[in-house]
Amino acid sequence: MDRISSENPAVETLRATVARHGARRKRVDLREDSLPEGEVVRLVIDGTTYHARVEGGFADGPHLSGAYDTPDMAREGSGTNRLDEWLDAAERPVGSSVLVDVIEPEFAYGLREPGTEVVYEAVEKPKASLANIARELEER
Image (cartoon, rainbow, N blue to C red; front, side):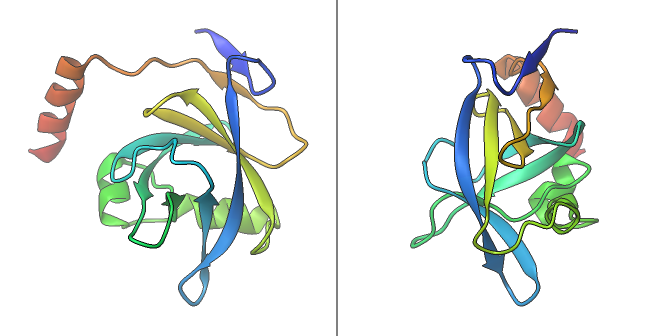
C-alpha cells in the first residue's frame, strides 16, 4: 500500500485549536470550513484509523468532539472516545494547537501534534455506489 508523509506538499495541513466541550471533555475546533459538516470521516490518530463525525452548529464552526472505533459509534457518540484519550495522553490542554492533515478530502484526515511528522497510508474515497452499498449494510 502507498504511504504519504504529512510533510508531502500534496497533504494540506489545517491548524486547529483544542477547546472545551462540556464540563470535562475537549474538542478540536477547525478554522476552515474544509471538513464536511454532519458527515462521518476517517480520522487517523497515532497510526490507527478511527471514525469521527464532523460537527457544527449555528455559532460554531466545524469541530471534532470524538473519535470512535466504528462509523456507528461516531454517529451515536457511543463507546470509548479515542480523541479524548489522545488529547490527554499528548498533554494538549484547552487553547493549544493541533494539526489536521487532509489525507483524502471529505473522507480521511490525520491528527497530530505540531512539530511532528507522520506517515499515513494513502487512501481513496470509495466511489459513490460502493459507499451507498456499505452504508446500507451498516444500517442493517
